[in-house]
Amino acid sequence: IEGNPDLKHVSTSFAERQNLTMRMHMRRFTRLTNGFSKKVEAHANAVALHFMYYNFVRIHKALRVTPAMAAGVTDKLWEIGDIVALIEANEAQADRKRGPYAKTQCG
Image (cartoon, rainbow, N blue to C red; front, side, top):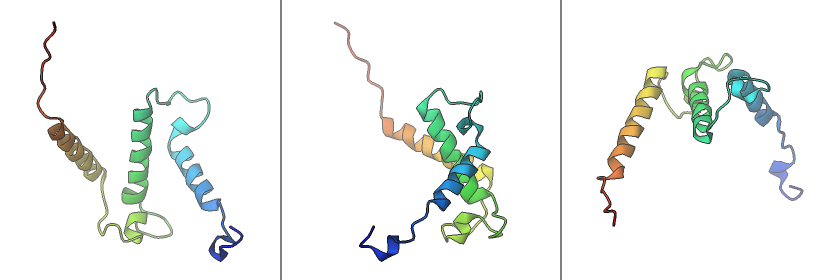
């Protein structure tokens, strides 16, 4: 950090703001809640869904567009249905990759 002038003014405020936003939107990150995930996969899916909604669906008050639109990642305002369609397409593709089920012979 000392030798790199770009890292002289590094701040954690952006990361801390993102953490606060995530904690406020998803109660599974707050203490003493019954909305916790029993499985790591369910927890990861909830986090992914939050970030998809936050970046692609929710219009930012100051930007007046979604963060993804402001960054040039997409040019359209997404809806929840678009995220559901994306998930369903991903699941359909994963089912095709599995291949046929082969029974094993027991001795």
